[in-house]
Image 1 (cartoon, rainbow, N blue to C red):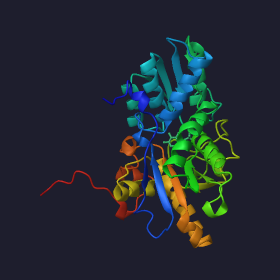
Image 2: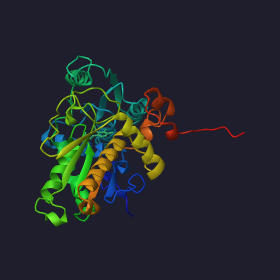
Image 3: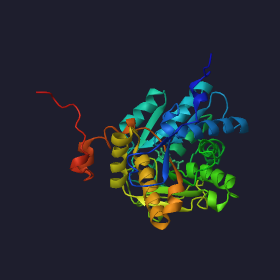
Image 4: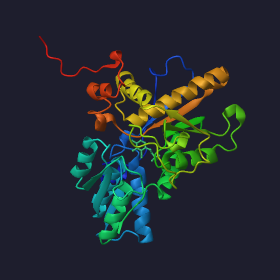
Length: 344
Ligand code: PMP
């Protein structure tokens, strides 16, 4: 019999799938790494597992302890899964821009959820960083993983995501594209892929190029932290989990373009994924178009892997709602979704 002892053992080893419709007219092979296959439904299960195990080893987290983290939801689910197995309590702090669906999921896993306003600076006492610090100070046995500065975030990607991408492409990946939130994914995966391909011959693609995708307005692509609606990516400060020397470039993508592509992925590729996935795919397609313009022969040999962090299920009342999209002026008439038409 083949079975896992616990769902948390099934983190990682997610599949690659070739994008075939949204890539029309492009000769590069574009492969999506679909992270919603993780048991908690997102890429964040990887860092949750590694951060908790490292904290246990170093004695920061002891039996009966409480995990307190500011999280937009996905990291919370990963931590909640791991915490359940190991008997820890969880308290999560979320900004109010995070969809209610996502917060309800955390509560369903048995976590306590505290909601804070989005429109305050990070050093404000009501910011989600400040509130989580206060809860840690007031809770005995509390440990804050702090995904923004914890080196085990990028380390989990160096140990799992990077080798998976390399092995599943038989070492042929030429470009890796990922959105940047804490920066853990791009830093850890990118570092591994650059190291393993450092001596690859130019005719075989040379070292893997690492490309970040970022909401227009965020610091990673030169913005000032101006608000954007895509969740889980972009920052208004520089987290320690992000090593800016790893990405070769960062491509800014607007909310409108991110959400339009997110809808196309569901409709044309059968991939119901989140807004940061649409953002990353949009960046990957721009990269592919540019390669095509620069050198069509090299472009036809390019193998671009783009990481899709989560599922679209948590965004039904936002990106997949025509009314919500229209309220921000994001909706083209031909992109409308009509659900529940009454037959006459
Ligand atoms: N997309 C979503 C939906 C996320 O939750 C996150 C994590 N914040 C990311 C992308 C970015 O990943 P990372 O933090 O590793 O940069």
